[in-house]
Image (tube, rainbow, N blue to C red):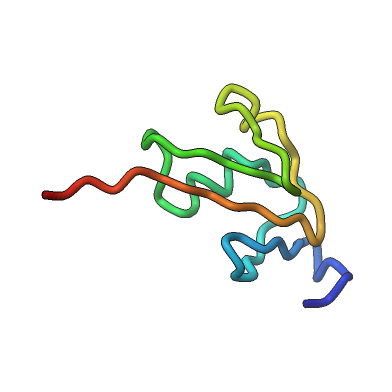
Length: 75
């Protein structure tokens, strides 16, 4: 993974996979882009749990590492 942002974009790692996002994106923006908005999720940013209410204000930066976990129903 490059340590430079590319043309106003950043690269973050989500669950071990690189994702390119516009600079200034928040953790909430990322969750929404993954189709998880409104679903129960737990977000860890650089090994620290981010409370759901803080996601919209948590701006992501180049090379941030996130783990996102959601519930999966089934039977």
